[in-house]
Length: 427
Ligand SMILES: *Cc1c(COP(=O)(O)O)cnc(C)c1O
Image (cartoon, rainbow, N blue to C red; front, top):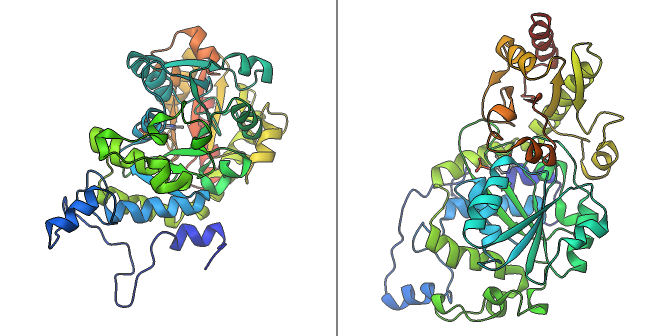
């Protein structure tokens, strides 16, 4: 059946068992696959026949789950990766190499910032970071002839700035590059970036998609809408023969719908090996089965906590796009089904010291380097995920030294609020 409701895809997408086959997705815990003839194996290696031969490249369990996420995002092809970091890296490295350049929003996850600004820079790929609130002219001024993509986050972690995806997409297209969106905090339940013009979506499935703090993972989804063949000189890896893979030209053999993911699988996954494990893919699918139900609750709790904090005398400021008057309120209304997510950022009056005392007093919310879990967790980014940034870089990423990131789980909102109140009362 076509055009199923997103909720139905969360539960049943990606895998349809045949008569007498397992109802739940099978965990194919096998590194390799057996064939009757070498000739058949040769065809698989030449990408002339479809089938599995080695789990470092592809595995059926992973593919069921990738297919479900692909259906949820409305894409044409997808792949799982070992982590969200691997997904960001591969999505960029698939179309950029030494000597190339990427424009990225400055309001992104700290790990992504470090990957781009430090590690990928060392590989010879240059990044220019632009404020998501910069004018079209300012963003366009960052583009160079060797720019290969524009990158941004739907809801920035932890700054919680909502990206104007449609505007970023039109700037990307004007400059002949795809828009790559990290849709981790929104999930396809809350936002589908392809509907607003983005071409590639990446996820850290570690967050809401898993949702139970059970497995680290990532995913790359292609909309199949960017026509690489219009720019063969800019994207030679997709438009000219890959000598490292039997001379295949990905756009010719797999079309613009399949070229990006096939290249990322056949070339990058082959060489980097950052594959998801089938066991973890199974857990990710368990998370997906309830994603639509959980996201609603995460967002309801997020709004309730944000509203409460907003009226509390010991709180200096609150950031939550679902909150009327928030800087991202209008964009949240436009792009997010629930207006926000489960994560709230705020500052306690008294700055860094008060923030540390508040966090130590919390009883239900635990201090963790994590977000988007069933259990409420909280973090002080200036002391943890973003400690490699100086104050100027922190400010560009929308983070102040007193910022507390509070990720509402699935508990009762009244208990979370009571916990916050007692922790604030004690400082
Ligand atoms: C956590 C996170 C990542 C990195 O994902 P891992 O699975 O931890 O590697 C990337 N982007 C965002 C928005 C994240 O929150």
